[in-house]
Image (cartoon, rainbow, N blue to C red):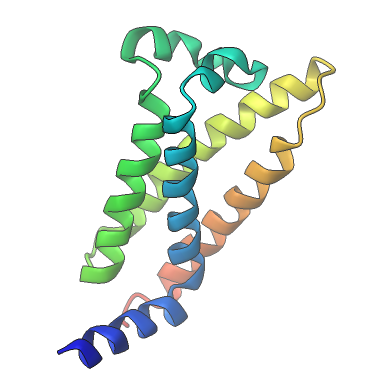
Length: 137
């Protein structure tokens, strides 16, 4: 039983490496934002999302990252046919974060997170292509 689960996880990791690692990373970043709720209100890159924070509270963005990541991990493990939808949701959320950092950079404030979020977006696009190629596995 345990060897079968270990073999399944190994196959998932090797066949869907980009989706697996980027999803884990999204869950971790959502947890980081959840542990630091003032970061969304105080950092310039998240200012355009402050209206959402006023309506939903500071847990909206982190909760979206964690829920979409957890659903994607479930979709990968159980091989759901709708697993690409969760990649699109994560891509949209990370695009919002990227747009915030881009606005920050345009306003003349250094934004290292721009490169960080661009890297995650490229990984998500790669994971989307990877999911399309390995759909039968």
